[in-house]
Image 1 (cartoon, rainbow, N blue to C red):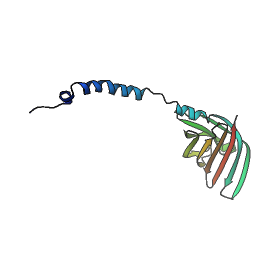
Image 2: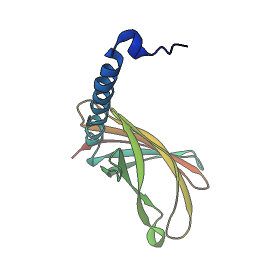
Image 3: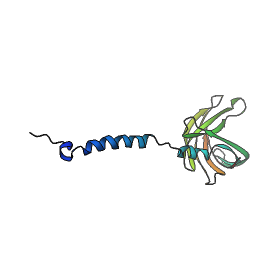
Image 4: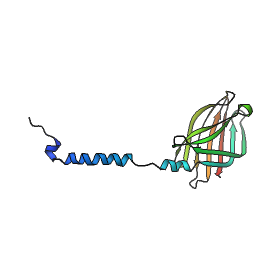
Length: 158
């Protein structure tokens, strides 16, 4: 019985191609640097000043709060951003941050649960975007305790 191999049919061409092409594919794919995520994140990082309109579901009331300052920093993993968050009031006050995922000119943060310093539970989530000039931020978020408050922030980069 005769054994047929690619070497017998095509000579050494497949072996030579394998030795050249496979390592080249490895180096071309593994050594590229992805700078687009850092560029996307940079659009949001900084201090934003604006106003926030909030709707309170418990009494169907709307309130405008200004000025409001939003602080956005670099995420710990380099592929996200951190958005400052204040929970509770007075002795219950706790400062923390939301972790948001950025894609192009928008970001989102999934529902996250937090406790203030008195043990009160909060759940928050939301989305945001920046205009193409990178000067105006719009962010809509909700804060859920025993009721739900929905706020929309619009501000400019400082």
